[in-house]
Amino acid sequence: GAGVSQSPRYKVAKRGQDVALRCDPISGHVSLFWYQQALGQGPEFLTYFQNEAQLDKSGLPSDRFFAERPEGSVSTLKIQRTQQEDSAVYLCASSFTDRGLGTLHFGNGTRLTVT
Amino acid sequence: TQLLEQSPQFLSIQEGENLTVYCNSSSVFSSLQWYRQEPGEGPVLLVTVVTGGEVKKLKRLTFQFGDARKDSSLHITAAQPGDTGLYLCAGVGRDDKIIFGKGTRLHILP
Image (cartoon, rainbow over all chains, first blue to last red; front, side, top):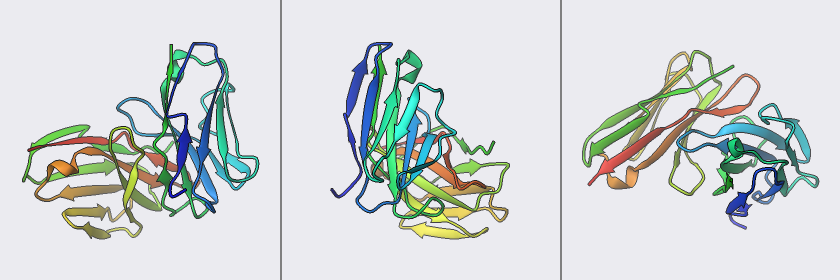
């Protein structure tokens, strides 16, 4: 596709449920980032992949959050036992270069609401 | 921890007016980027500034990177309703992590 695609666009989960959020980056992009954006805030870094390697997961808020990119393209962010504070927009971005000066191309995000 | 502070947090002005928004940090960044985000969409890159003191112009938008590479400003001349959005600055820090400020929410009144 022409841009970064995220699915689902919206997700409502009951507290305690597991969710999986998908990101299809731009073909050929080496770097993939996940960010969490709370209402009215800027994106907060969660994790970074260079191809299939997860080089930085320092932003994941707890061990309930897990991300993978097994073949170096599609990535999945999984949240186990969701809590209300997990409600946010989850943004995925990809970049042609390894991180540094590359342009981040963002998807439109998945809005997660935990009830 | 490297932080980027943006000000003002909100700005509402009339069409045709000029405005400046700021992005400040106590840390040095190897480069800074400005993004604009519209509701329901992801941020879109406007510009990257790399050299201290650098000035870049994008039509009515002027971006400046501070000499010490700790701060940046975005100046908009003759604002238009289409400029409405959330303006985010992002810095590439020491560990190559890209971090974002909380943004300036700009509303241009017709």
